[in-house]
Length: 137
Image (tube, rainbow, N blue to C red; front, side, top):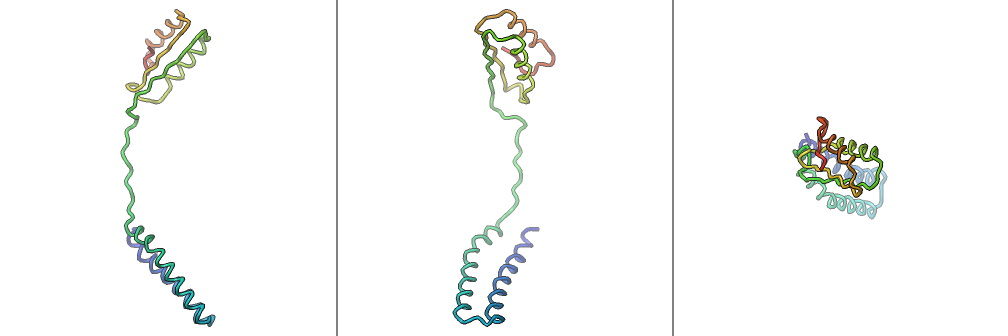
């Protein structure tokens, strides 16, 4: 479609410029200096627009690139805790499990400075859950 409309656009562009030049020179009986000035300006517009018309004549639509669903970069999520309320940690781990990412490329680490046994139990329980997408280390 586009290559067929390009000549029409060029003719319309040249025709409108020449028409305005002729209209000014003949109908309004402009002085010779004004007519020459307008002719020079019209040629200047043509010469400036040549790269634009060359670009348009070589234009073609680009095909979209096929991309993978997930990036291939691996991500490590480190959750650090120290005397945090256990409900806050469980909520954060649950939110991490909702991340839309390839499980092969995402790892979750829980670092607890308090060395709490109940946090270890929660992590083990969450690792045994069938809804678990990302294993917790």
